[in-house]
Length: 327
Image (cartoon, rainbow, N blue to C red; front, side):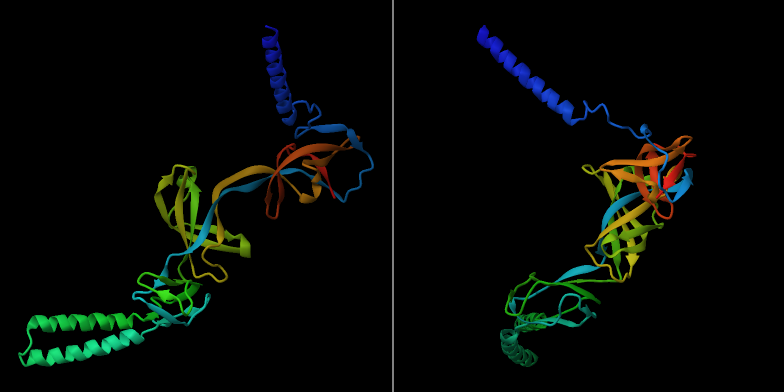
Protein backbone atom coordinates (compact mmCIF):
# COMPACT_ATOMS: atom_id res chain seq x y z
CA UNK A 1 0.00 0.00 0.00
CA UNK A 2 2.82 2.38 0.90
CA UNK A 3 4.45 1.77 -2.48
CA UNK A 4 1.15 2.52 -4.25
CA UNK A 5 0.68 5.77 -2.31
CA UNK A 6 4.24 6.83 -3.13
CA UNK A 7 3.63 6.15 -6.80
CA UNK A 8 0.34 8.09 -6.74
CA UNK A 9 1.99 11.06 -4.98
CA UNK A 10 4.81 10.99 -7.51
CA UNK A 11 2.39 11.20 -10.45
CA UNK A 12 0.29 13.85 -8.66
CA UNK A 13 3.24 16.19 -8.13
CA UNK A 14 4.46 15.56 -11.68
CA UNK A 15 1.02 16.51 -13.05
CA UNK A 16 0.87 19.56 -10.76
CA UNK A 17 4.30 20.71 -11.94
CA UNK A 18 3.32 20.41 -15.61
CA UNK A 19 0.05 22.30 -14.95
CA UNK A 20 1.88 25.15 -13.17
CA UNK A 21 4.40 25.35 -16.02
CA UNK A 22 1.60 25.66 -18.61
CA UNK A 23 -0.16 28.36 -16.57
CA UNK A 24 3.07 30.29 -16.08
CA UNK A 25 4.03 30.24 -19.78
CA UNK A 26 0.51 31.44 -20.63
CA UNK A 27 0.96 34.54 -18.38
CA UNK A 28 -1.76 33.27 -16.04
CA UNK A 29 0.20 34.57 -13.05
CA UNK A 30 1.10 37.88 -14.73
CA UNK A 31 -1.45 39.98 -12.86
CA UNK A 32 0.20 43.15 -14.12
CA UNK A 33 -0.58 42.30 -17.79
CA UNK A 34 -1.90 45.49 -19.38
CA UNK A 35 -4.80 45.38 -21.81
CA UNK A 36 -5.33 47.85 -24.69
CA UNK A 37 -7.29 50.90 -23.54
CA UNK A 38 -5.74 50.87 -20.07
CA UNK A 39 -4.60 54.26 -18.76
CA UNK A 40 -1.73 54.10 -16.29
CA UNK A 41 -2.31 56.73 -13.61
CA UNK A 42 1.21 56.15 -12.30
CA UNK A 43 2.56 57.31 -15.67
CA UNK A 44 1.17 60.87 -15.40
CA UNK A 45 3.56 63.42 -16.90
CA UNK A 46 3.20 67.16 -16.63
CA UNK A 47 6.42 68.04 -18.45
CA UNK A 48 6.17 65.77 -21.50
CA UNK A 49 8.21 67.03 -24.47
CA UNK A 50 6.29 66.73 -27.73
CA UNK A 51 6.05 68.47 -31.12
CA UNK A 52 2.29 68.86 -31.52
CA UNK A 53 -1.12 67.73 -30.35
CA UNK A 54 -3.36 65.61 -32.56
CA UNK A 55 -7.09 64.97 -32.15
CA UNK A 56 -7.88 61.32 -32.83
CA UNK A 57 -10.54 60.85 -35.52
CA UNK A 58 -12.31 58.04 -37.26
CA UNK A 59 -11.71 58.09 -41.01
CA UNK A 60 -13.04 55.96 -43.89
CA UNK A 61 -10.53 53.30 -44.96
CA UNK A 62 -10.63 50.74 -47.74
CA UNK A 63 -11.06 47.11 -46.78
CA UNK A 64 -9.23 44.55 -48.86
CA UNK A 65 -7.77 41.07 -48.79
CA UNK A 66 -4.62 39.84 -50.48
CA UNK A 67 -4.33 36.66 -52.56
CA UNK A 68 -0.84 35.25 -53.09
CA UNK A 69 0.27 34.14 -56.52
CA UNK A 70 3.07 33.74 -59.04
CA UNK A 71 3.91 35.34 -62.40
CA UNK A 72 3.61 32.94 -65.35
CA UNK A 73 3.65 33.11 -69.12
CA UNK A 74 0.58 31.70 -70.84
CA UNK A 75 2.81 30.73 -73.74
CA UNK A 76 5.90 28.78 -72.76
CA UNK A 77 7.59 25.60 -73.90
CA UNK A 78 10.57 23.33 -73.50
CA UNK A 79 12.38 23.13 -76.83
CA UNK A 80 13.29 19.46 -77.25
CA UNK A 81 15.26 17.30 -79.66
CA UNK A 82 13.31 15.13 -82.10
CA UNK A 83 16.19 12.92 -83.23
CA UNK A 84 19.19 11.35 -81.53
CA UNK A 85 22.50 13.12 -82.01
CA UNK A 86 25.32 14.97 -80.31
CA UNK A 87 24.80 18.66 -79.58
CA UNK A 88 27.18 20.54 -81.86
CA UNK A 89 26.25 24.16 -81.08
CA UNK A 90 23.93 26.03 -78.71
CA UNK A 91 23.53 29.45 -80.30
CA UNK A 92 21.62 31.24 -77.53
CA UNK A 93 21.90 32.04 -73.83
CA UNK A 94 19.28 32.68 -71.12
CA UNK A 95 17.59 36.12 -71.49
CA UNK A 96 18.27 36.19 -75.26
CA UNK A 97 15.37 37.43 -77.39
CA UNK A 98 14.65 35.19 -80.39
CA UNK A 99 12.24 35.33 -83.30
CA UNK A 100 10.14 32.50 -84.64
CA UNK A 101 12.29 30.33 -86.92
CA UNK A 102 15.67 31.45 -85.50
CA UNK A 103 18.23 28.64 -85.24
CA UNK A 104 18.74 27.75 -81.57
CA UNK A 105 20.63 24.43 -81.51
CA UNK A 106 22.59 22.52 -84.14
CA UNK A 107 22.97 18.75 -83.75
CA UNK A 108 25.76 16.78 -85.41
CA UNK A 109 24.25 15.83 -88.78
CA UNK A 110 27.20 14.11 -90.49
CA UNK A 111 25.88 10.56 -90.14
CA UNK A 112 22.38 11.57 -91.22
CA UNK A 113 23.75 13.47 -94.23
CA UNK A 114 25.71 10.41 -95.36
CA UNK A 115 22.67 8.19 -94.80
CA UNK A 116 20.43 10.63 -96.66
CA UNK A 117 22.83 10.69 -99.65
CA UNK A 118 22.68 6.87 -99.91
CA UNK A 119 18.89 6.75 -99.54
CA UNK A 120 18.41 9.56 -102.05
CA UNK A 121 20.57 7.72 -104.59
CA UNK A 122 18.59 4.53 -103.99
CA UNK A 123 15.28 6.39 -104.33
CA UNK A 124 16.32 8.03 -107.61
CA UNK A 125 17.29 4.60 -109.01
CA UNK A 126 13.99 2.98 -107.93
CA UNK A 127 12.11 5.98 -109.32
CA UNK A 128 13.72 5.51 -112.75
CA UNK A 129 13.02 1.77 -112.69
CA UNK A 130 9.41 2.39 -111.68
CA UNK A 131 8.93 4.80 -114.60
CA UNK A 132 10.42 2.15 -116.88
CA UNK A 133 8.04 -0.39 -115.31
CA UNK A 134 11.03 -2.37 -114.06
CA UNK A 135 10.08 -1.88 -110.37
CA UNK A 136 6.79 -2.49 -108.61
CA UNK A 137 4.61 0.20 -107.05
CA UNK A 138 5.28 -1.28 -103.59
CA UNK A 139 9.06 -0.97 -104.14
CA UNK A 140 8.66 2.65 -105.26
CA UNK A 141 6.46 3.57 -102.28
CA UNK A 142 8.87 1.91 -99.82
CA UNK A 143 11.81 3.86 -101.28
CA UNK A 144 9.80 7.10 -101.23
CA UNK A 145 8.79 6.57 -97.58
CA UNK A 146 12.40 5.91 -96.52
CA UNK A 147 13.59 8.98 -98.46
CA UNK A 148 10.92 11.24 -96.89
CA UNK A 149 11.55 10.01 -93.33
CA UNK A 150 15.31 10.51 -93.62
CA UNK A 151 14.85 13.98 -95.13
CA UNK A 152 12.60 14.99 -92.20
CA UNK A 153 15.04 13.52 -89.65
CA UNK A 154 17.87 15.53 -91.23
CA UNK A 155 15.82 18.73 -90.90
CA UNK A 156 15.37 17.98 -87.18
CA UNK A 157 19.11 18.42 -86.59
CA UNK A 158 18.52 22.17 -86.93
CA UNK A 159 16.34 23.14 -83.94
CA UNK A 160 14.55 26.46 -84.37
CA UNK A 161 12.37 28.72 -82.21
CA UNK A 162 8.68 27.70 -82.40
CA UNK A 163 7.57 31.27 -81.58
CA UNK A 164 9.01 34.69 -80.78
CA UNK A 165 10.09 34.97 -77.15
CA UNK A 166 12.86 34.95 -74.55
CA UNK A 167 15.14 32.06 -73.60
CA UNK A 168 14.60 31.41 -69.89
CA UNK A 169 16.86 28.40 -69.34
CA UNK A 170 19.57 26.42 -71.14
CA UNK A 171 19.37 22.67 -70.52
CA UNK A 172 22.15 21.39 -72.80
CA UNK A 173 25.74 22.19 -73.73
CA UNK A 174 27.85 21.34 -76.80
CA UNK A 175 28.99 17.72 -76.57
CA UNK A 176 25.86 16.51 -74.76
CA UNK A 177 23.90 13.65 -76.27
CA UNK A 178 20.38 14.56 -77.36
CA UNK A 179 17.57 12.12 -78.05
CA UNK A 180 13.89 12.32 -78.92
CA UNK A 181 12.14 14.30 -76.15
CA UNK A 182 15.36 15.52 -74.50
CA UNK A 183 14.85 19.14 -73.35
CA UNK A 184 17.46 21.57 -74.66
CA UNK A 185 16.08 25.06 -73.91
CA UNK A 186 13.13 26.76 -72.25
CA UNK A 187 11.34 29.58 -74.05
CA UNK A 188 8.50 31.92 -73.03
CA UNK A 189 6.50 34.74 -74.58
CA UNK A 190 7.06 37.99 -72.59
CA UNK A 191 3.90 39.53 -74.06
CA UNK A 192 1.63 36.85 -72.58
CA UNK A 193 2.31 37.19 -68.85
CA UNK A 194 -0.33 36.45 -66.23
CA UNK A 195 -0.70 35.97 -62.48
CA UNK A 196 -1.92 32.66 -61.12
CA UNK A 197 -3.26 33.20 -57.58
CA UNK A 198 -5.19 31.24 -54.97
CA UNK A 199 -8.24 33.10 -53.65
CA UNK A 200 -10.02 32.15 -50.43
CA UNK A 201 -13.29 30.42 -51.35
CA UNK A 202 -15.29 32.89 -49.24
CA UNK A 203 -14.18 35.72 -51.55
CA UNK A 204 -15.24 34.18 -54.85
CA UNK A 205 -18.54 36.09 -54.79
CA UNK A 206 -16.50 39.33 -54.45
CA UNK A 207 -14.53 38.93 -57.70
CA UNK A 208 -15.73 39.08 -61.30
CA UNK A 209 -14.28 37.99 -64.63
CA UNK A 210 -13.28 40.92 -66.82
CA UNK A 211 -12.66 43.21 -63.84
CA UNK A 212 -9.19 44.65 -63.20
CA UNK A 213 -7.34 44.20 -59.90
CA UNK A 214 -4.16 45.64 -58.44
CA UNK A 215 -1.15 43.31 -58.65
CA UNK A 216 2.02 43.95 -56.65
CA UNK A 217 5.41 42.34 -57.33
CA UNK A 218 7.29 43.05 -54.06
CA UNK A 219 10.76 41.88 -55.16
CA UNK A 220 11.03 44.61 -57.82
CA UNK A 221 8.59 47.06 -56.19
CA UNK A 222 6.31 47.07 -59.25
CA UNK A 223 2.60 47.89 -59.17
CA UNK A 224 0.54 46.46 -62.05
CA UNK A 225 -3.04 45.99 -63.12
CA UNK A 226 -4.33 42.55 -64.04
CA UNK A 227 -7.60 41.59 -65.71
CA UNK A 228 -9.33 38.55 -64.23
CA UNK A 229 -9.72 36.13 -67.13
CA UNK A 230 -10.43 32.78 -65.52
CA UNK A 231 -11.74 31.27 -62.28
CA UNK A 232 -11.03 27.54 -62.03
CA UNK A 233 -14.36 26.04 -60.84
CA UNK A 234 -12.82 23.62 -58.35
CA UNK A 235 -11.73 24.37 -54.77
CA UNK A 236 -8.65 22.91 -53.10
CA UNK A 237 -10.05 20.95 -50.12
CA UNK A 238 -6.83 21.45 -48.15
CA UNK A 239 -6.37 25.23 -48.44
CA UNK A 240 -10.06 26.06 -49.16
CA UNK A 241 -9.02 28.25 -52.10
CA UNK A 242 -9.86 28.53 -55.79
CA UNK A 243 -7.28 29.26 -58.47
CA UNK A 244 -7.66 32.33 -60.69
CA UNK A 245 -5.74 33.75 -63.66
CA UNK A 246 -5.23 37.48 -64.31
CA UNK A 247 -3.75 38.70 -67.61
CA UNK A 248 -0.94 41.26 -67.40
CA UNK A 249 0.14 41.52 -71.03
CA UNK A 250 3.61 42.85 -71.78
CA UNK A 251 5.33 44.07 -68.62
CA UNK A 252 8.92 45.31 -68.33
CA UNK A 253 11.09 44.08 -65.46
CA UNK A 254 8.77 41.24 -64.43
CA UNK A 255 9.59 37.60 -65.13
CA UNK A 256 7.92 34.18 -64.81
CA UNK A 257 8.32 32.63 -61.37
CA UNK A 258 8.21 35.92 -59.44
CA UNK A 259 6.05 36.16 -56.32
CA UNK A 260 2.99 38.43 -56.67
CA UNK A 261 0.10 39.72 -54.56
CA UNK A 262 -3.40 40.40 -55.85
CA UNK A 263 -5.44 43.00 -53.93
CA UNK A 264 -9.17 42.26 -53.69
CA UNK A 265 -11.23 45.29 -52.52
CA UNK A 266 -14.00 44.53 -50.00
CA UNK A 267 -15.57 47.97 -49.45
CA UNK A 268 -14.95 50.59 -46.74
CA UNK A 269 -15.24 51.05 -42.98
CA UNK A 270 -14.72 53.73 -40.33
CA UNK A 271 -11.46 53.22 -38.43
CA UNK A 272 -9.41 55.03 -35.80
CA UNK A 273 -6.17 56.12 -37.46
CA UNK A 274 -3.29 57.99 -35.81
CA UNK A 275 0.01 59.37 -37.16
CA UNK A 276 2.93 56.99 -36.85
CA UNK A 277 4.86 59.62 -34.84
CA UNK A 278 2.33 59.32 -31.99
CA UNK A 279 3.05 55.66 -31.25
CA UNK A 280 5.70 54.61 -28.75
CA UNK A 281 6.91 51.05 -28.26
CA UNK A 282 8.60 49.25 -25.40
CA UNK A 283 9.24 45.67 -26.44
CA UNK A 284 5.90 44.39 -27.74
CA UNK A 285 3.94 47.03 -25.81
CA UNK A 286 2.48 49.92 -27.85
CA UNK A 287 1.14 53.12 -26.32
CA UNK A 288 0.33 56.78 -26.91
CA UNK A 289 0.36 59.77 -24.56
CA UNK A 290 -3.19 61.09 -24.07
CA UNK A 291 -3.71 64.66 -22.83
CA UNK A 292 -5.93 65.06 -19.78
CA UNK A 293 -6.57 67.78 -17.20
CA UNK A 294 -3.56 66.95 -15.08
CA UNK A 295 -1.12 66.35 -17.94
CA UNK A 296 -0.43 63.34 -20.16
CA UNK A 297 -1.27 59.72 -19.41
CA UNK A 298 0.13 56.62 -21.08
CA UNK A 299 -2.64 54.77 -22.98
CA UNK A 300 -1.96 51.19 -24.08
CA UNK A 301 -3.15 50.48 -27.65
CA UNK A 302 -3.18 47.69 -30.21
CA UNK A 303 -2.36 48.65 -33.78
CA UNK A 304 -3.42 47.17 -37.09
CA UNK A 305 -2.25 47.84 -40.62
CA UNK A 306 -0.46 50.81 -42.13
CA UNK A 307 -2.81 52.93 -44.27
CA UNK A 308 -1.08 54.89 -47.02
CA UNK A 309 -1.17 58.70 -46.56
CA UNK A 310 -3.24 58.34 -43.38
CA UNK A 311 -1.24 56.59 -40.66
CA UNK A 312 -1.57 53.51 -38.47
CA UNK A 313 -4.92 51.90 -37.71
CA UNK A 314 -5.65 51.51 -33.98
CA UNK A 315 -7.86 48.46 -33.51
CA UNK A 316 -8.29 48.92 -29.75
CA UNK A 317 -7.36 51.41 -27.05
CA UNK A 318 -8.69 54.61 -28.66
CA UNK A 319 -12.25 55.55 -29.61
CA UNK A 320 -11.80 58.89 -31.34
CA UNK A 321 -11.91 62.36 -29.84
CA UNK A 322 -8.83 61.91 -27.62
CA UNK A 323 -5.98 64.40 -27.92
CA UNK A 324 -2.60 62.71 -28.20
CA UNK A 325 1.00 63.89 -28.38
CA UNK A 326 3.06 63.71 -31.57
CA UNK A 327 6.83 63.29 -31.36
